[in-house]
Amino acid sequence: MRIESVWGPERSVTSPHHGAASRHRSHHIADGSATLERIVASVALLLVGFRSQWHMGLTTGYLLALVLLPLTLPSLASFRWAKLLVVALGACLAYGLVVSTWSSDTHIISSQARTQAVSLHVGIVASVILVLWARTLMPDGAIAIVMGLGAFVSVGTGLTVVQDWKFGYAMPATLMALGAASLRGGRPTTLLVLCGLGTVTLFADARSLFTTYVLTAGLLLWSTYRGERQGAGGRWPAVALVVLALFVVYKLADYVVLHGLLGPDAQRRSIEDAARSGSTLLGGRPELAVTYDLMRDHFSGYGLGVLPNTHDVAVGNTALFHMGLQPTQNGFSEYMFGRQQFELHSVFGDLWADFGIVGLLVSGLLVVFVLWTLSSAIVGHQLSVLVLFLACYTGWNIVSSPLWSAEPTLILFLGLAFPPLLRDRGSSGPLNYIVEGSPRIGYAHVREQR
Image (cartoon, rainbow, N blue to C red; front, side, top):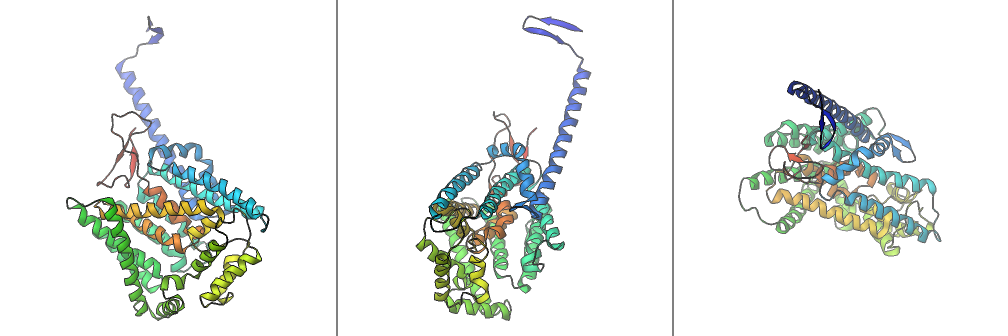
């Protein structure tokens, strides 16, 4: 039946049964769309973890993350501070291009190296946005499992050069195990998983990863203990406690390794590192001394695509001499300068070389975010074990791992640690989110209320 309305054109009058059927079809369509989105997100995350090179530094995972940006980009508005990713990327690329023109008088600029660097940085940000979007579709643990599976397959198929536990299987296995523990396991199960991973790593001579497991377990226990008490304290005292805890764990790890509890090989190398610089950290990472001397010589950075010249190599070799190392010993000089790029073996060093002062600022913000995340455990918030582990490992990578090696865990950390903007059911806005599970201040799986 058709009726005329004084408020507008004619409209149809339908029975309640017809309206119910329409709503039922709408729910089916919505469910089908959500399922398709989960499949697309899972494939993209798998490829990001797989890290198969496609062209000029662009991996297949990066490529798919970029293609999906029209779908994933709106998710930035639903997470606190996430928009800073795009701002930081834009500032870095702009300054990197500017500072490269300053360096062009004394350095060669490689268009291939520039394209590869841009692909890496843009791909990382696009992948973080992909993880943020995936958090609206699936639990955090499932995201880690899928990315870990991609990395595991990459190692197993020989795509990754090193196929041992320390440099090959350890991180994929960690992501899958902790992802599964965060989905189904309680605190005791999670601690058992960390103990198991730590035991395997202990015999594989992976000192830094073993220390990360210990620190994660300690923070997990502390967050559980403080979560059961009232008046956990303020944020800044918690940050100070995190710094103190990091120092204590470092000194304990020093004692353990120097007394041979991690095996004779680790003991020998650690004694040599300590004798070289008075610290196992600085002695084990002579690239930090090289980075420091390069900063003193050329503080503005070098820029995107800038290749090291003979003066830069001389500065680096001098720093190695002062550390008691021959430049050719263990291939340090060849690694840092001989591959048509600056490779300073730290996230902050690589960001500084490409983006200068802006890169250092981004590194500082990353350190603050890591400390802020870890301090949440100190004040009693029950954080996901994934976020705790990734925060600890990212903090280590900032000073000790090249950006390309740190990329998988950095993507996951940023993607899982940004807290969602929580809204009430009745509030206005494009999306309404609720947090499932215990009070995790937005680190747990977030789900769109449809």
